[in-house]
Image 1 (cartoon, one colour):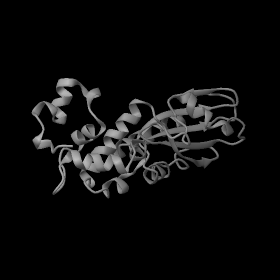
Image 2: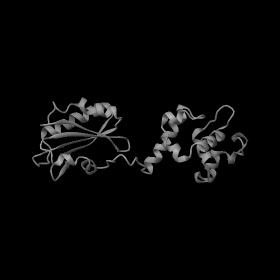
Image 3: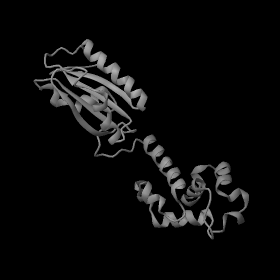
Image 4: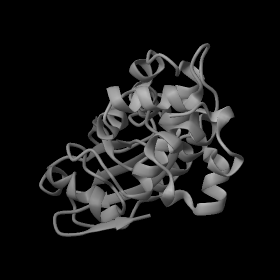
Length: 217
């Protein structure tokens, strides 16, 4: 392929996209628009061709920052740009890791907490979610009567930081069968919400689970 500077203006990737539409660009031209610049001795189109010849598109989508940044012609800045573009595309298409359950509602969360329905004592459990609302970690925080001494913000948020969670589902059971949250439940939820605000971690749902029901509050 001719060097990009030698191409007629209307055949250069960005101009071609504007005039003919993004669907009419070759893969290497799309990659060139993302990368913007080449490296010494190779223009951006040549670099794009070499990358796509070495890494099929599906494989490229699966690479992490460390592997992308080591590809000749990329580096950290361009690796970040590509990862961001890939992630936006995956989210738009709802492409998910099938090994991770997705929590899009309180009902989805309860499906991951069925053991609480038959528990004889109160269990306080946290579900930790990534930016795609996928469950990356589940942890029992306390067992016994729910109070502020047993459910401290540091016990909730340390796993969130460890697992890079962006949001948390808080759930506990009421063995009595009464789904309405108590005053203590509400006070704890408010305290944890305030703590999460300082850390930039959202409390997605607070849920009470009983043997045959659940309530989001």
